Image (cartoon, rainbow, N blue to C red; front, top):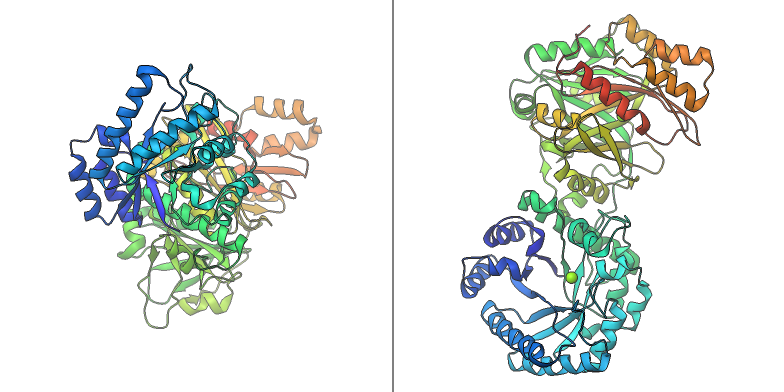
Length: 624
Ligand code: MG
Ligand code: MG
């Protein structure tokens, strides 16, 4: 399907917006009137700039408060429309969006409104243009696409059609099946927006919280599939009003928009079955879990990390045959330490300091994963390898780090291709079995971008987003996980002066903030951590008093929790135990969890953890 975006979605001057839109892959735009009014380019110059970028302007919008007027106001509305039609001729677009009126004393009579549109249709036809009528969810008299369709039918004019906007339909809960009553050839344009299902006033919701398909809670697959069934073959055009989008880099927002539409088209194609006008992509990648975490480090920080890995119970089991790269193993966890003096990891550690530069995901689809990614505009990354070495399919992910794909449970045949096994001494395990979850922090403005990145690429579900109080503000946190819980990522959008934003700042951008390892015996692991000299986060006595009050835990258990600074939570499925390490150079930290059947991530404990981290402030954990 033809993919379009309205200029209102993006930040910047009109030319910057057009650049971002064209680079992201769009070939069509809607020009938002205000973007034109404030531009110092004439409509003719804008037409040339559009053509130079291979962009068609498919709609000029919005034209407000047109219908149901009387007397001088009605004359004025038609004169205003005539002027805009002339402008559209210069701009090279043939469609104007008229949204339903909010004027208090405009007529509610559908015959009167239809007569206005019939007359407007004649004026439009005289200028070689068309008019699409859109029901605003908060329109004075017309606020439902069924009413707007009724008026278009009554107007019965070839130059008057309907514009559907998913926000206006779905925010009011209008049944999607009602679209089946609309004639496809009378739908002049379809505008697409998603939104979080948060009850709020319609106008405010629309102007601030619209988002790209897949970032919110509307069932856009069903909505657009119903439209396709009417025979509509026009554009899907993103019309998004979102404060965060308008505060962020237009190139990234435009890329997200493109990705969201390609992903939506794939979902519709799967729903409706194979057809020539809908492009299906390779299946979403089904993840089996995190198979490795690669740390980039150099100099003394690399030494510190090596020591810390040892204290966390990891044994060095392999050395890369041609590179300064080591592999550390415990249970089913692989940590790779990359100390190469050149190349990607080195550049990454110079930019961010010692940090996670790649996350490996296991999947049976590891060879085809890049195909789906590429179709959605995700950048592939090709590693420099020596002959005979593994070429691991990788993409650029959060903050420029890599997302790599491996077989589900890479064994000796996988690792020993590149790594010379190292004979290990005694078992140093402290009981860590696997990666439970990986938490990534990012500026709030990037939060929805990375959410879309993961949910459009991987077969994962979004858990409800939670706001976590931080000593200096709020953090938006959301878990993304596979249905079986084998892969769990948490995304933390950090704004203002929050502690999470301090991680983002210390890191110079988005990246892995903490890694949670699973244990089957939290106290055994806690004792081993203490024995190995790993500093963990100290928790206040008040916290344990509160735990006792909330859960009525027995005195023995409570004393053990307090003695080892273990956090506790309980849900309908089970108990959850957590220990946090002190942060490594303020950039990232480790967590150990005992999960059982517990479903969450200890959100009630997050403020306790954040306050404890704020107390130790800038102090960096001593390395054992
Ligand atoms: Mg609209
Ligand atoms: Mg965690």
